[in-house]
Image (cartoon, rainbow, N blue to C red):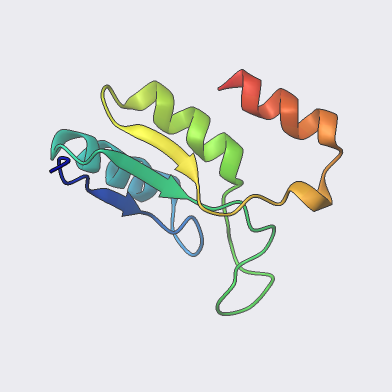
Length: 93
């Protein structure tokens, strides 16, 4: 039987950066296998003008600040971006 994997999804909306960074680091320290956020262009709950961090940049920052956890996007806004830009953002990680 395969090992059970555990992941965490951290909303990147209606939060501040220190809290979002700490959530990623804590999931890493606790031994979670994967850490996820999304790449919605505006918040999916509350006001569409509310605060939200861009998904790819969140992943890049988590990659720098964590040691073992695998990171990824649950949703990508690929159809709203030029394909070459999306590819460049992915290869940057």
